[in-house]
Image 1 (cartoon, rainbow, N blue to C red):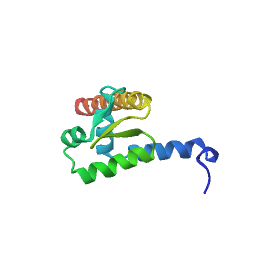
Image 2: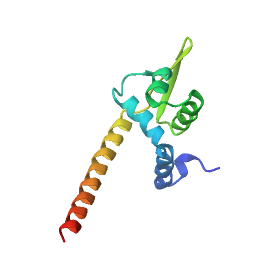
Image 3: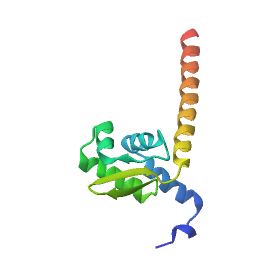
Image 4: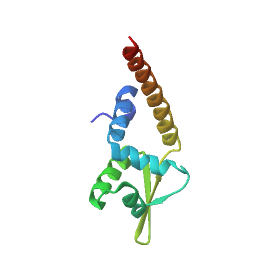
Length: 115
């Protein structure tokens, strides 16, 4: 197996985006991005996402595998946080990009209606 450091950067980036490639994983990261320096208890994530504990656990496992979140157990509670504050920045850039795309699409549709 090729070490991650020996793989081309575009392949490593693609794997990062695979870790992001689910709406619930994006939602989890957005919840953790509210205050990138703070931790969120798994119970709060269950409540906010509406996911069953087993499904949330699977998504969190993917996010940990791709090193997007870290976890820490204290007593019987597991807390999650962003592994890097840049994850919040990435989500912000994605929101800005999507807003631009939606605006452009809206303009194109308006132009078609007027024609």
